Amino acid sequence: MFSYIWPIALVVFSNVFYQICSKSVPNNVNPFAALTLTYIVGALCTMIFFFSMNHDASLIKEFSKMNWAPYVLGLVIVGLEVGFIYAYKAGWQVSTASTVQSSFLAVALIIVGALVFREGITWNKIVGVIVCLVGLFIINLK
Image 1: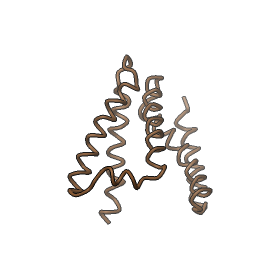
Image 2: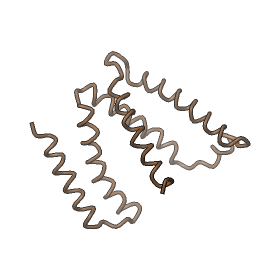
Image 3: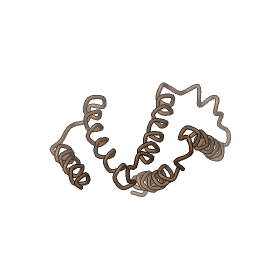
Image 4: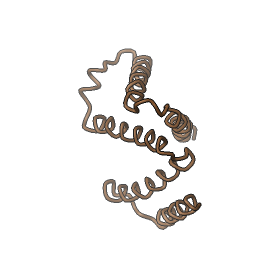
C-alpha cells in the first residue's frame, strides 16, 4: 500500500512548494533566468541521486537508451514552469491558478487517455468533468 501512496504524496508535497516558489519569483527577475538556476539545481540533484542509487551505472549508457520522451518532457517542463510564473506575475492567486489549470487538465487528460492510451470513458469520469466545470464556475464567481 505504501508503494502506491508515497509517489502521489510526494507529488502533492512537491507541488505545494512548486506553487509557492513559482509565485515567489520576484517580479523584477526574468523568468528564464530563474528557471536556468532552477534547472542547474535540478540537474545537480538528479545526478547526485542517480550516482548514489546506481553506483556502477553510466549516464552516457542510460542516455543511449532514451527515446523522444525526455527531450519533449524538457520542453514541456519549461512551458509549465514559465506559464505558472507568468500567471502569477499577471495576478493569478496561487489557490485559483492551480485549481483552474488542474480542472482543464483533468478534462484534457480524459480525452488524451481515451484517444492515445485507449482508456475507457466511464460515467464516473463524465461526472468528474461536470464537477470540474461546475467548480470552475463557482471559483470564478465574484
